[in-house]
Image 1 (cartoon, rainbow, N blue to C red):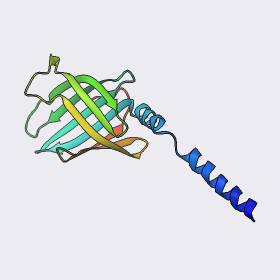
Image 2: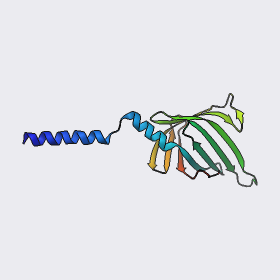
Image 3: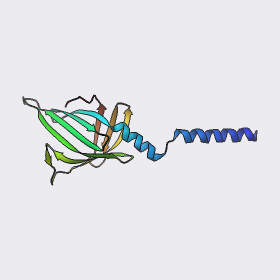
Image 4: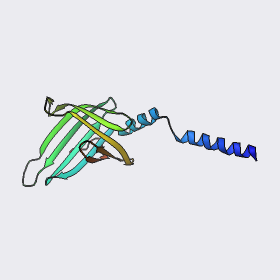
Length: 145
């Protein structure tokens, strides 16, 4: 009886160890999962916004956005570039340029979201400071805003 109990306890410990990867490999796995092209669409103050975010493997990002306002023939477009990282909990982006120009004060060039993955093809980011939740879905590399 004692040998059987020891066997089951050791088996349980081994299974638990196999199910829980080390913290550093988990963060790296999430980082690899974030690499690619993501789309965020939403409506704000009557306008429809499309943002395409590309997170590159080298830690750089680029983002293109369009805003289609009702009654306005042309869409407003903008582009941003910078660097990104995943710290194990948060996706952090530091903007270096907006519309081809280096960013200067008073523009805040940092964006931080605590992220989760409701599915393999989407992530949700929460900005706890500004009380904002964003939803991105994975799209083809050729997707335009």
